[in-house]
Image (cartoon, rainbow, N blue to C red; front, side):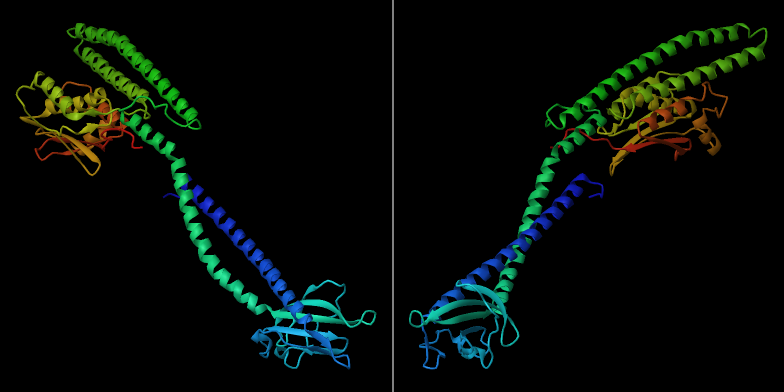
Length: 454
């Protein structure tokens, strides 16, 4: 897929946005998890603090005592990660898990329990609940503080477990959403693929207009393209009519010049021959200019195709009726499926000039052969005549005559080359195995059906 592909750019942009959204979602879920873990831990610690507060008593010397310790074994394991402590002024009662250290939470205010951060006996971070407590006879209460704390490393382990599950889940979700959005983009761009195929059918000549069955967002573009096709068709008709009028208007003056040349022939043969030659040259230039006007009017937007074999057979039948044509052996080997990327009139102009040139120069044989393979097509016209030199072949493009012994202006093959190149074909010349001139007309194989694949 090319870098400037709209589908690629939309897909990459969508993938980037999905990745960003999932990253933000993952970060948000992690923050929510931390808050939930803290709230749940604080609630559990507060319940344990209430349990301990219900079991606290004061000794005769005012020291706090506890009738029964909480059952969690971590309270009995040194640095077990779960700690409790009861403070009665300077007297402190603590769990075995604190070993010989105490929790320093500083002063807490108020009668409600508070959640604070503390440093554990092994230097770890703790989340702690400090619950105030008053015991003793009314009026002589002793104020205590019950502290229960848990090491945050246990919470970190839970968080790590959550992330180990979250990351693959988000990655899988990214893949699923990216594929879904890629399919969505592919589907959304389907009208443009259909439009491209329909335009290909117009280029191939199997359709003259684009269908109107498109979504509302694409229909204005289709309407503009159809208006362009209609305008080109009208311009083509006008150009052909103008070319025909021009040809008709110039034929008469050229015919008059030719008649004057013949009339003055006996009196001044040199002048007569020069006038006749210039009249023929002017006729050739007019023919070439008109041919260029016709193919330029056709343009490149709406390419029509035609089958080669029927045109070749009709032209050969015509050549047989021309002088010297009935004495030649004509061989045609053109596949029925071979198609030329132009109108039938254009192919007749190209192939007709090539066959006419072969008729004039061939001794006994003329061969027409066609082939199509690998997406390319070839049409070859060759004869057993004297052939042409490289200098003469180079002069074809300029309309120069390479031999004055045959009638003609020298513009026929040059016109054939112009018409062929306008259709996207290439015309090349060389030496034939038969000894004469070989003309190779090559082009890219046009679409067979032109039917859009949706």
